[in-house]
Image (cartoon, rainbow, N blue to C red; front, side, top):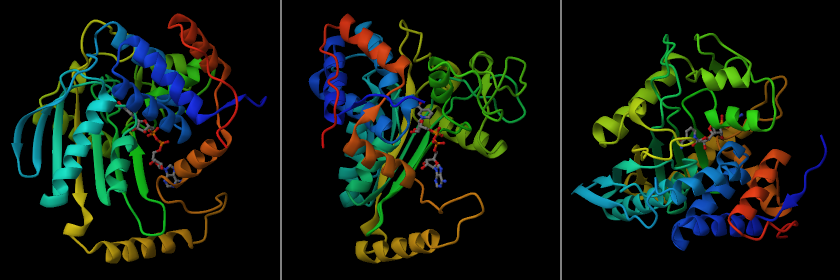
Length: 356
Ligand SMILES: NC(=O)c1ccc[n+]([C@@H]2O[C@H](COP(=O)([O-])OP(=O)(O)OC[C@H]3O[C@@H](n4cnc5c(N)ncnc54)[C@H](O)[C@@H]3O)[C@@H](O)[C@H]2O)c1
């Protein structure tokens, strides 16, 4: 495969922010959303990076996402917030709510929030890593438009409802679980199709008849499969319950498409929050214990065909460090789309090079 041009993280972030501001977002909102997209690309989650910039911008420009909207606490008790996202852009709303939880957890030990009237929040790790940086354990979940079959079913009734948990460690990097409850995020099939792939692994999705398929187009007409069969289905359902029944958002079956519905707000729900470690265990003792756990895992012998045992999030962290050093590269289809976007919004295109 030919080596693609690399672009500096700073230049990519500036470009994304400018497009989003031109589309109508406030500068602060655009900065957070742009940062989340670049963070996704840095972590190797291309499905949730700049490839989505056009759609995020279009959703703001058409007014189906409300620019400048500030989330509102509608019910509050110690450790519990019920928040109305007021149809604001998902990333800034999620950041505001996570920061409220972290602040309250400092004195209360923990705080969890539901969010209704939300929009696509991108990668869950963007929020949970904020809590981990504050010395807390972060949790973030969201429901999403129905695109995944329940175990044993052939109709899509649940979203690929993501789940992220981030746990800070002492000397080791944090543990960051960030996953779709489908075998992989549906965005990976959308990106594969955009890049011209003709085949995907057979355990990712089913076609319209509920039969496993390796054809990305048939998979997009069909539905995703839950990870781990009935277990992934159960977790996706629990997330839908927390977001919709508890939080007041639409259930997955009532959430409108991020990609092609520019008339009706999505009404996505989030469930997020933070535990303050120091309220449960003195921080230095926790760090000692978690480092010992990770050392045991890291020093264990790899199975045939593997180089090492990894801590969840370790691969993403390594990729991010490399991307910050060397810049990020994109497939030609993604670059062509970004270049067209630059023209449409009259924004200077991204300069080549890296920050280092
Ligand atoms: N906003 C939404 O509606 C939505 C919906 C679905 C997914 N997403 C996002 O999509 C992204 C991708 O999800 P995915 O399920 O395709 O991710 P993935 O399959 O790439 O990774 C899932 C998790 O497994 C861990 N992991 C992978 N290999 C490992 C190994 N060998 N050892 C230890 N840990 C390992 C990763 O660190 C990660 O935490 C996530 O950021 C998620 O938040 C968002």
